Length: 148
Image (tube, rainbow, N blue to C red; front, top):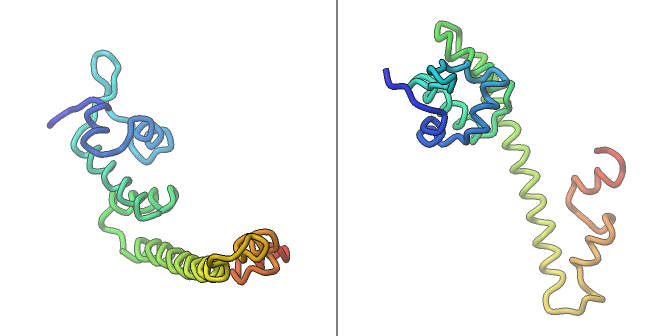
């Protein structure tokens, strides 16, 4: 079994030292062993867990979802439905974000198109930013009406 310092674990896992300490503090990473100088000593299993957490964070999973996924990983005899539900919820969030970003893109394109080479007094960018009522981006309209 290979044992390594937190510095080596950070380098090999791609997770920063403060983040490793945070994951330990919130219980995503079990407290590692300690050496004679009371320094953390990480094993290969810790690196694998850090890689799992890092990948899940890169995919946008929240800490509570990662905690559940880690629990499922630790108990592989469980049905996969809980993991599926977590992934489906994340996918729904991503799809909603894509729709929102596409609407935002359309609004920005309209602003830019409406302001080609004119004067600031006729600038659609300035007008739209100054008056939410001119904005066609759905979420801005919701914000100005108090729906958000």
